[in-house]
Length: 426
Image 1 (cartoon, rainbow, N blue to C red):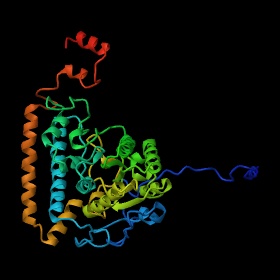
Image 2: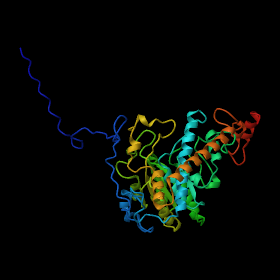
Image 3: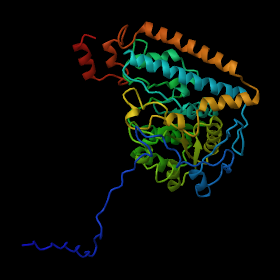
């Protein structure tokens, strides 16, 4: 006896007010994962020199194309072209090259120190050196800086002692911060360098507040601040843009879009829907998207934004389109989430190599000078490291005395702290 053939049940009729098909959630995915070849074919850039340079008095609604484009100055041959090409002294460029090279040597030495157990943590900024080196040189030394945690170049430009920075990394007895900050979370008030915070995006709101205070008091100083692409998803980012726009705060708001947060690509923060610079448009902020691996583009954009701020025309949002060549930190393994050959295939190149070639093309630099400077910097960093390690490291040497935990907390210690200090015998 044959079984009757079952007939498929007809789909239920759509109910008014409901979808006819099941809903699906889209989760952004990078173009390539580990084991796959890197793919940047989806990225298209305007030619160097092709992006227009508006007047500094331009309104945000007249600059929409600049948030979606890319300001580029150096072409493939190393020539500065177009309206954004800054009039910059070759000595300033040579100083910028030195700072970027210093950052890379310093990063390499401190990374190895962490791997040797001499410190607990480190973060390299390989590939992003132009973002802060060029910006710091375009600003006045009296301007205030509210940095993120991958930017020693700001301190190198302002000639802050490298030994002090290394002591902070080692949390030894020479650490002015007395071991209270995570390594690389520097603080240098005398250099106009605000304490780095591990809580993401807080510096954006702090920078806007400082800028508003500068304007209220009739000061002449402006400020600049930096966050990563992932941090744009934090509430502090949006709070800062609101206040910066409403009160025309004299601040430069920089987003370092290095394509990756600690383990998620920039699309998770919304970078796949529109450039991060485009977020400024909704707040009425003039916004620029620039080649963050082009020293001259960063310098020119910072100059442009600084002039706006100094002439009471308000804040500017700048997205630096760059690439994090290394892991997020020493606690991160990028081989677990991105293609192994991304670094080699990144289409906008190496900022150090690009500025080097430009200076050589101008006749102000040579391969021989470059090799010599590399050797000199390696010696300088190595000698400074010896001095810092003679004071102490995580493994050995003198540490901050436990009594320092009671210092620099309150201007005037209250009775509870005095009592606790007595109980510990300090």
